[in-house]
Amino acid sequence: MLVSSITPTVIRVQEKVNKAADKMILTGQLSTELLLVNNARQTAREERNNVLNKIVQKYGEMYSHVAHRQIIADEIEEDRVVNMHEQRLRKPFLER
Image 1 (spheres, helix red, strand yellow):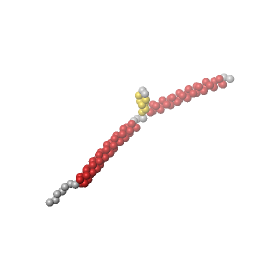
Image 2: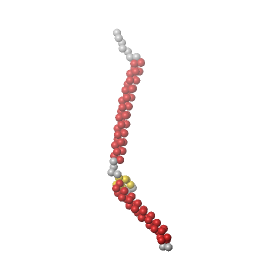
Image 3: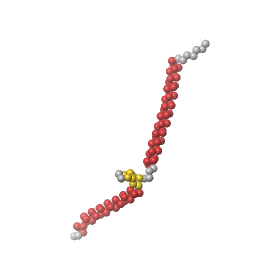
């Protein structure tokens, strides 16, 4: 008569196999979740970067072409103010 009794060594090996299988499954699930999170972050980043070149400022949003026009106008105004200042400094020398 053949009696198949499980030895403690076989039980330990089965436990290790089950633990390794659980670890592999968990690792696969974690990597899948990590991949989903990374993909969601990438999608959010792309959405932020693909916005129509608008600059959010204190009183609302401004589109880039408006900002460029304002920058050019500010530079022209600044040049005019500097020119007026230079003319004021030159005026005493021109009156001599």
